[in-house]
Length: 292
Image 1 (tube, one colour):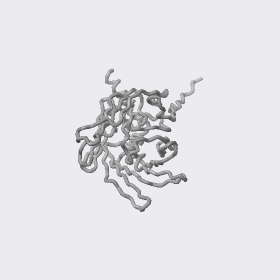
Image 2: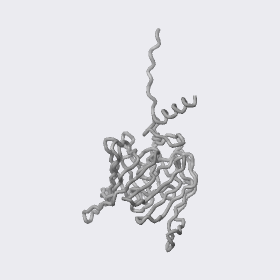
Image 3: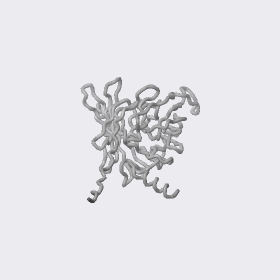
Image 4: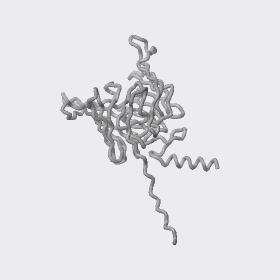
């Protein structure tokens, strides 16, 4: 009986989107609710990824999906006005292969300022792989030139969570996770291999992390946790301090409110996410006619 139950569980887990579970058994991807608008900041989540090369440290804006509920646009707001427009492009295997970053001009026209290209091992689908090659290219619209940053190599664990980022042989970032699938620490290194700053997450809730609704959100926001942190601290080297003397740069502690599907909507009294939720319609079962 025990073996039968285990086999049944594995089949049930593999049936869902992207066919994988956390070590604790929960299905990783939960696409019932997808964020329409979201605020992501370092004070709550480690937000140090594609968009944050310019160190704005926060995304506050809207997310748009296509008819298949695939992320295609993200619009970041500054002081309530649209400032950045991100375009997500996919290949025939549904892999995210490019993100275009446009500056929104005062006349609402778009000016390309950067783009990111992503490549995966052969046979990858839905951006689910053990590794990815990511390159940032900056566009100078004044001098009409482009500059490509050396390629980053992203390495993921068996739950598709980011573990390390390398640039050549240099490790730039390393993340550790607990058994349940939540990040414990995230360390950022300089090109010389020196620890520059790090994040510590000491506690989490039991809600669904909003990035679990879409693989592209995980990649874009670098949010790979199963749940949502309730206590986080960012340490950085203090001004004039030695290489091993760190001070607290930012910290956050608070609780969440949730929608009826257990996705967070409010953190520490502030609305952080709004969702579009679609309940899958069960297939119609046509029963044979009853003989008369």
